[in-house]
Amino acid sequence: MAHTPNPLPDLPRPTKAYHKTVYPYVSPTRPELNVSGKSLFVTGGAGGIGQAICKAFAQAGIERIIIVGRTISTLTEFESRMKSEFPKLEMIVHAASVTDEAAIRSIVRSSGKIDIVVSAAAICHTTTPPSTVATSELSEILQTNTVGPFLVISTILHERSIQGWDHELKIIYVSSALSHTHICHLSGYAASKAAMNLLCLHLSMEWNKRGVSIFAIHPGLIYTTLTGKVFPEDSPIWEDGESHLRGFYFDLASASVVPLISSSVLN
Image (cartoon, rainbow, N blue to C red):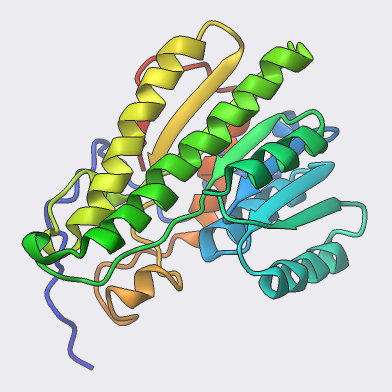
């Protein structure tokens, strides 16, 4: 089958060495990166990227995973598979939207101590030129991809303050390659991701010296249900990303990574 031209030729790649598989330094099986006894809080955890991240932490011995997603059937099905593969793992699933302030505050409050946060919930609008993006779609995109993640992160930071947590907290926002390059027919999606990148930078500067590390990372061009709505599965842009994706997110959340003032990380 003939492939279409790569629509993202200008995607920034800031390092000479470019890995597509897990290399030893970011392997979840590294003994010194063991996360036993810790809790992971994931939004969008039943999606393609979210599932890969949950599996990485389970492989590394995480004690508890709290997942927030919109579809209860998808959540419970993933929970069943994870418990079958990792019988000692405690999993808690919540069906809620990241834009539901009351639900998010209740879930965070009931979750107890949280060590690692991964914000992976996202939606995309219909591909269309920038001037024709429906304002209703743009509003929904910004609510889910920018306001929602900010709500989750700020709620957890608030809970940290009122509970007096003094342990190290790692927060990772799943950004997008499109926040760094130009795809005009996905302008609203790109803007929502770029906006949250900047919010992560400001949050990082505020909390950097208070035991909290905050990162915004684009995971590479990974084929998922969401991205598959935009580009075909046989497109040349996709990277063999699940394995190295798991390792890189896991390494960012490990104790070996020092806080960054500039929180935007390109994969």
